[in-house]
Length: 139
Image 1 (cartoon, rainbow, N blue to C red):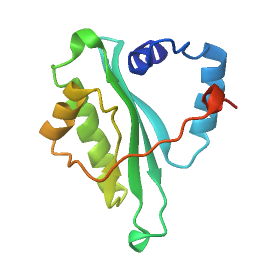
Image 2: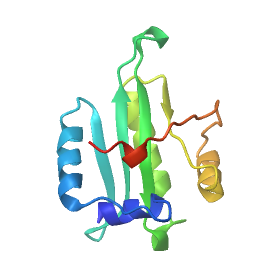
Image 3: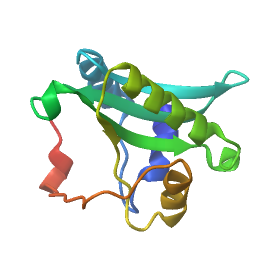
Image 4: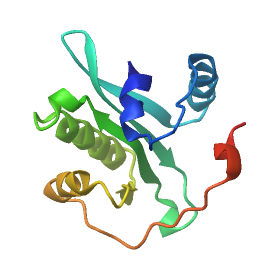
């Protein structure tokens, strides 16, 4: 179900990920000291997901920072507070970990997502830069 939800974040033509590769990646993520994929459930069904990595940091007095990725809520369930609850959970987790900030990036075309983050009190901060690699950086 998580992989199906993550498909909502894909660009047209993206083949997605096969379940065996996803299982290997998930196992590797689980080996990181503070990296987790969270799900929101309702009635036994997964209705949302996000990943949170708390990164150690040598700057900012050694305070860690939180990095949120792959935030998605089931399309039919958007606007019902699920995403807000997930992000509040992530913010609380980062605050408890002593993070000096929590960051995420959002595709410039996702204007509804930007309004969502604005409404939660996120500040538009800096610029996001990316380099893409042939083959998607598959390992």
